[in-house]
Amino acid sequence: MIISPALRKNFVIAIAVIAGFALVPMVVTERYLLGEVIIFFFWAIVASQWNLIMGHAGVFSLAQMFLFICGAYTTAMLVQFGDLSVWLAMPVGAVVATLAALIIGAACLRLTGAYVALLTFAIAEVVHVLIITDTECFRHISNNCQQLFGGATGFSRFADFGFRKILKADWMLGNYYVVLTVFAVTIFATLVIIHGRYGLAFRAIRDNLGYASSRGISRFRYQLIVFAVSAFFTGAAGSVYAAHFRFAGPSLFEFSTLMLILSMVIVGGLGSTWGPFIGAAVMMIVVEWMKEFGDARNIGMGLALVLFVLFMPGGLAGAFKSLWGRIFDRTPKPAAAPDTNV
Image (cartoon, rainbow, N blue to C red; front, side):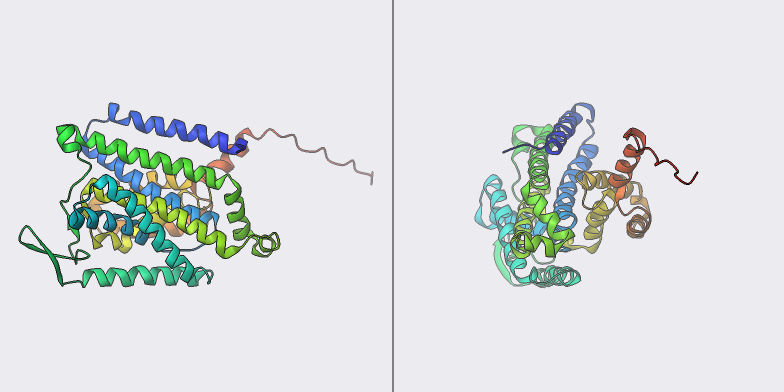
């Protein structure tokens, strides 16, 4: 495989970013702050995959959190009901999310634009309602009735990575590096896709469907591919989320969470390479700062979305790129043509 200069440059940036995060536990010892960084990893993965499918492939899907939940619920159910090791359950969760994406994509990607967004959101909401209205007892665990899909409370307190037994009080460090590994793999895979042939095909479909079709690029095929790829990494993030928090429940379906991830993508820069990661970091800080305001933070996220869409559509990544070009672009401008009317 020929590595393009853009891919090589972004690989160097990715290595530096991951190395920096690997050193964070040596500087930050407070468990709460490490926990916040771990949450950043989860949301940054989901935001990057949403950016891949929406920003690069032009598919306005609202199913990303549903795919995240597929990974989380599959892992929780396999551990809870099948007594399977969480290490074996997590890959299955990613595969199930991918299969769910293929089924949803086969049904939805025949449509375009807002119809895809509405249909994917409707599917997620139908599943949400089915889960929270599930009251029939499937199995008794510790004298408690457990529904097949967890009902309104979901699944909790199941087995995790096992670092609590190995590292004792430092179990958070083990979890941190597991999540960081998934984060790193997602970054490198996403960079290869964005700056490779598939990324070029995705953007061709997004920007000029007629020209892309004339070059033999099938819109349905390539959009189904990006839907499945993004679902795999989103589902993997959901699986690791369930293993880390030992929880998977319907609260993950909350609209505020969907808006948070969407705001990360928009604020960071839709269609950029590093925008979702920048947006995730910024919005995590904003949410942390606005915790004391309660539900008003949702208003803050909505306001941020409106302001960025209106005044900074390229997001923070676009603004930084524009500023960088103004400062360091030394390309000489062509000389003006002589005035022949003198």
